[in-house]
Length: 260
Length: 323
Ligand SMILES: Nc1ncnc2c1ncn2[C@@H]1O[C@H](COP(=O)(O)OP(=O)(O)O)[C@@H](O)[C@H]1O
Ligand SMILES: [Mg+2]
Image 1 (cartoon, each protein chain N blue to C red):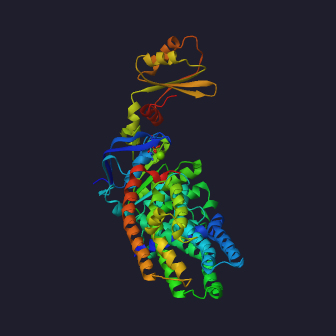
Image 2 (cartoon, rainbow over the protein chains, first blue to last red; image 1 turned 45 degrees about the vertical axis):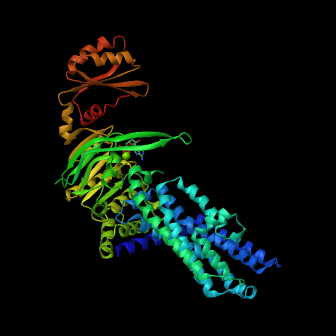
Image 3 (cartoon, rainbow over the protein chains, first blue to last red; image 1 turned 90 degrees about the vertical axis):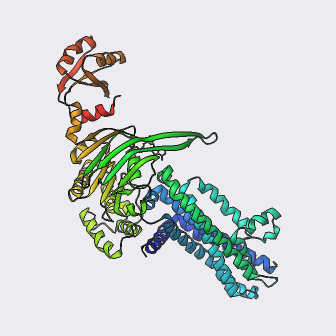
């Protein structure tokens, strides 16, 4: 019970720190908005096929969602390192995974908020353009995508805590996911080895289902795609279990949490 | 059972230097420390920068693992029983980092109260009591960035006391405070110990340790070089006297000459504006005074005096500080 309260409080505090930080509005509000406007522009230019339209509008939103959901917890860990609080929260009787769980949830909330304009567009605006959009399948796919983002962010968050240099490397991973998971174009356009890598990334399957829910041309196998995304996410969590154990030990060997 | 105990505690940091050709460096921070601190004691660890004070504090507070040896607090192993131990201890590190500056003092305390898994009904009473006790009542809704340095440090202390810890660890808590703020904090710390808490305090201010600690360990280069009450540590220099004088220009061979005099234990030379202040610890000040003229022939000495040793002299001699 007290652990749930601790996780909840970590969530609330992370949200509050973001809301009062003017710079962070750039990442979770302004940039995603810009993406959406670009998407709208593509939409209004006319003549594009409906599947191109979908990528134009949702793609930008998905990039925004992913980048906020994935990096927000990492950024917040980095902030805590600068302010010297990372070590303080680590030394409390609350395991660090509970605190990071709260932080990752906060990142998802901001990511979803930044994605809402796009989702709304897909629901209301697109219905005329895309009569095939299936609201239920769309929402479930978005839910599965959110779960996969959550699991990836929660799994990688301890690495942000442990190694300062992990930050730049994990930033690269952010970009890789845009391209490999088919946010902007179907992964069929990728080299076959890249498609193989994409196959083990849970968002690939969720994004595929999400796009499929907006256009008619099949064949679509939603159940399989959803299960693939959920299954892979669960595998990541198993990795998280290992990584959190590593952080609990390794941070106490090197004393790295303290360094600014 | 001691409240805090260390047995042959060692810590070696392994770091790498350089970016391309990474070179492994080992730095020994603690070289076999033995300590036993009784419940209710205010115990001071006194030593210069880099002596290993923070490392020792972090091992006891479960933030670091020792390389070898044992550390126990309240009978709990600081290595393996960290979850049980963290609920029963508090810690405060010096400096003004470690708080959420953009949140209010109250929000800081509420957050940490939840992370310390304290029941809300306890928190509701304890936070106002701590704010009152530490002179922060009335300012708790202001953001921490608006607090003075002393208020921040008292907020730190309030955070360290949230779980009503049996043992409190304070790592250089007065660093960066103005003299008034530092004294206020020392008074509070002394009161906490008088109220029954075990307090482990590190400092590099000799007078601070002398003023409030029941017992002191002097640490240097990761080793304890003296331990006891402040007055027993003064005994290190008890059968000695001190001769001091000022001189302009003190060549190394003359210092060596002074060191060679009979009964001289140590010679420290400290720059003071254009001149140097020379402090000689010796068994017989009168003999040294008569021989000064021989060794320092032709130099003009000012303010020559001899006096009784103080705790500071004991500390300087133990630490071997000379420049
Ligand atoms: N995280 C770390 N990695 C490598 N070396 C460290 C680390 N922390 C401290 N040290 C080294 O260990 C020694 C003791 O440091 P510390 O415990 O901070 O001393 P003090 O608190 O007495 O100033 C110093 O030589 C310091 O440079
Ligand atoms: Mg220190």
